Length: 67
Image (cartoon, rainbow, N blue to C red; front, side, top):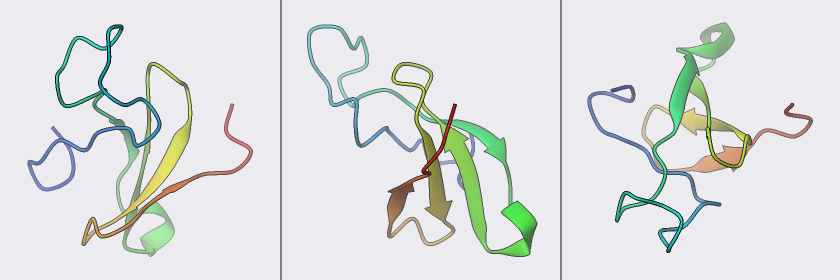
């Protein structure tokens, strides 16, 4: 479980009839501390979007040009 032991859920894939977890789809860690920038890179296995997550987890941004 990445992100300091806390699951982070995809902001695009909200819980619904096709998502088994009531919280949503959990993001999968791709790279920790990307280029020393204080962010992790993760992706959603359902929608295939990539995300940059700050260590404070105060902001989740979609990574443009993913896939």
